[in-house]
Image 1 (cartoon, each protein chain N blue to C red):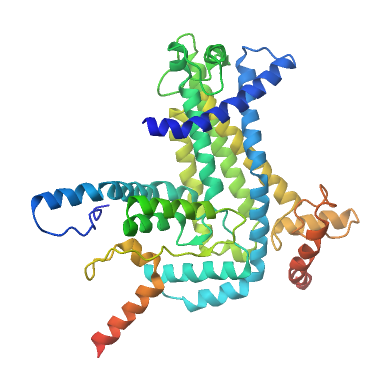
Image 2 (cartoon, rainbow over the protein chains, first blue to last red):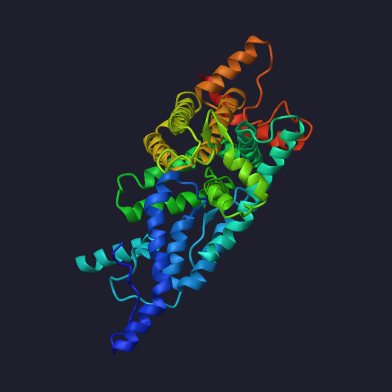
Length: 130
Length: 323
């Protein structure tokens, strides 16, 4: 719950930092809410979602990557699809414009795209071995 | 908070109009209008409406779970591929491949998020309606679709001396019997826990194939067996009697539904399926295709679907012959 501030805030000047904080506030509040939901409420139901990543994981990634407004919209569209007459399957969050520094990719992005990051991991191991 | 109120309003309205509808109907057939029992039956009516609306979702899920039998070989392959890889990323990769596989076969054992999420605002709306009734009365307000007279009537009504809007922890309105509130709350908490236990035990003991018993999904189910009673207990002492009536009834419905499924449409390869086959054999009836969901009820309507159902159960029958 402590890595809420994964936002990329350029480190120039007080006003910019405050502005960045306020700009990212809705997004970070949503992230906090979603993380709490995933920790507290999700376990009560076990897995119900017909998709990978699950709706709540999708929502968390969408808000992290796309921000509060577009992220919420993406999450809502996904939720509307998660009904018994949809056969589910793999449905990733579309790529966003935010870039993260090396090794600082949010956990949820890594977990939701295992094939991508598993490949990167084995790549890394190969390189360090060579 | 206003934003929240706006979202909740239609749900509160819908919940209260269903209750009022039942209340009017019950009064019309001669039940005392001001009695807590009439309002209790209205709450039970609300449960029946909501759960009946969810039956198609439930049937769909059962069919999908039965369809899983056909996926067993593919699933086994996938499990072998990820054998011994216990790191989180590999687990996630496996989950992803598994979902892709369900999609490919057009069958998915999970019940989907939307039906579950839709129930939440209804439950919450009911909670708001029932716990807000005393305040609405004092302020001379209406509540959802309930008129002020009905609000007053509801607030005054009680069963066994326990007002429907009373809670164990947060107090009983004047004129209510505190002992009755405590007793009723505790009895209902126990009833919910018991029905939950019985439902789970029934599923595990009678309605699961051997493969399913060994899956990691089972571990989660077993955990629920201990978490849910805790939730019932905490909720039970905080929620008004009216909400507890709703909750208990819905739990009993689940249990009844499960009994019906186990008896009439058991999982192929489970002990219950064997019992059903034996019962039918004893009566000299032919074995029915197990997936045939509502066999006797609407044969004509499902005639078209029946064909695929028979095909789907074919491999299962061979299995049983071997045994």
